[in-house]
Amino acid sequence: MTETWAVASGHPIATRAAERVLRQGGNAVDAGVAAGLALGVVQPDLVSIAGVAPIIMFDAQTGEVTSQDGVGGWPAAADVEAMHRDHGDHVPEGILRTVIPAAPASWIKALADKGTMGFGEVAQDALAAARDGFEVYPLFADFVTSRVEKYARFASTAEVFLPGGKPPQVGERFVQRDLAWTLEQMIEAEAASPGGRLAGLAAARAAFYEGPIAERIVAFHAANGGLLTAHDLANYQVRDEATHAVRFRGLDVHCCGAWCQGISMAQTLAMIEAAGRSASVKTQGGQERLDLHFVLEVLKRVFADREAYVTDPDYMAIAPEALLEPNFIKARLATIGECSDPLPAPAVAGGRSGEPAVYRVGCADTSHVSVIDADGNIFSATPSDPSYDTVVIPGTGLSVSSRGSQSRSIPGHLNALAPGKRPRLTPNPILALKDGKPWLAMGTPGGDVQVQAMIQVLLNMRDLGLSAEQAVRAPRVATYAFPGSFAPHDVHPNQVLYEQDLSAEQVEQLAARGHKLEAWPALTWKAGGICLAMRNDENRDDNRGDPRGDNDGCVAVADPRRAGNSAIGVRAAKPGETS
Picture 1 (tube, rainbow, N blue to C red):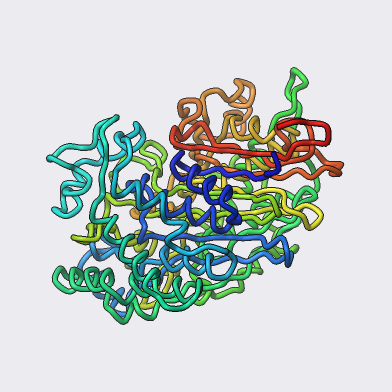
Picture 2: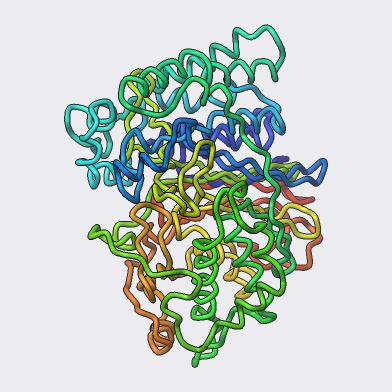
């Protein structure tokens, strides 16, 4: 065996798509895009082919880290005053939530800039799964069943997701012929292009944003009170965004920008590192455990700052980097005491909607793919956008991005919708380098739990010395003491959820410090669904996080909290070994 690579994603079909591409000579970007497209087909409840696709990548040849925002702005016709007048403070479910779809452009840009293959080559698995169907699995069936009334509201959505008037049943074949048509239009446009690979990719993109797919999207919006126009689609461009690199436990962790909560991930890392101590404590029995009170209090301040300062960077009153300044970090740390702060400033208390708390229903939408290839290239992407809160465009199978749910229809609000303005995403893939070399790609679904799950996994590896697999399986906690990212943006001061396999001693310590505790089941999907790929090179002294105990090769871990998660890690044979 000469291969050395790792893939982890939200579904086995997506993982196998990436594996196929790698075995055919593609790189991490080719493989990651293949997986990302497949996720949009086999997880159509959680991910949309026409949704969002934020991506962060490491180029092993140049040593460069780049990121793409992968989120579209509001259409030019968006009017916060009118939205507020007609619908109140929150953008309603349905067609009015639609922002410009970014995922197709984001996948194609990644291929053009860093890949080696064409769209048709990497889209084979996605097309087959749409055209021929895939076997309905429990997570998909449960998601649609639990939201059947929402799916039933819109005829075109119900036609796809409630075939025969009923939710898909486990073991049935789920076919999406209209979605297959959409992919075929892009593949055929590429094949008909007279130029080379880049010209073909441009043709595939044009089929979506200017050709027959765009025509159907625009016509439906025009006929049904939507906001998207041909001009919005034709002029959309994915943005290259600078990453925020934070030195953390001997690593350089690269996070996305303030157009998502990547800046919040970076601030969390910076605060814990600046504390100048391990985030672990010894229990009465002498075991090392995470100091969960400290971690939770850091997170509460990070999310308070997110609410007060973070939006599309084009609209921020401060530079995103101000949240990482040493004096600011020091001042935030100084506010952490021995007891829980129910709602740290500058967050403000908000009302309750009367709907079930988000920590009870969970934030299921979103998936992830992490890839590290034999050359050390890294691809980390967190595609998203559900289908239950929007309208499928007839004839296309597309649930066009409903990320408007993360904007506010409150005039003057920091995250108020505006023409061209990007909603502040929750998806925020990361990657980490050690000594300038590839070490980790990671991400997770989970909305406001994403940053919380990822920091606990990193601390489990770096401060507790757990293997990657152990770190992912370890019990987690989550705070909800901040305004939520999604409408109705509920606030739950002092609220902490914990997985019930957390040690009794840790639960008692959190209760003694004043946290309001409620238990989740062990290994619940509500605590995130980490997918990570790791590379450990032969001469590394620092072995923390390596799940095998040796230092060479690639490994992948898929969180058991999400039943669909899947991972494959392949390492090269050592001298003297046979494959």
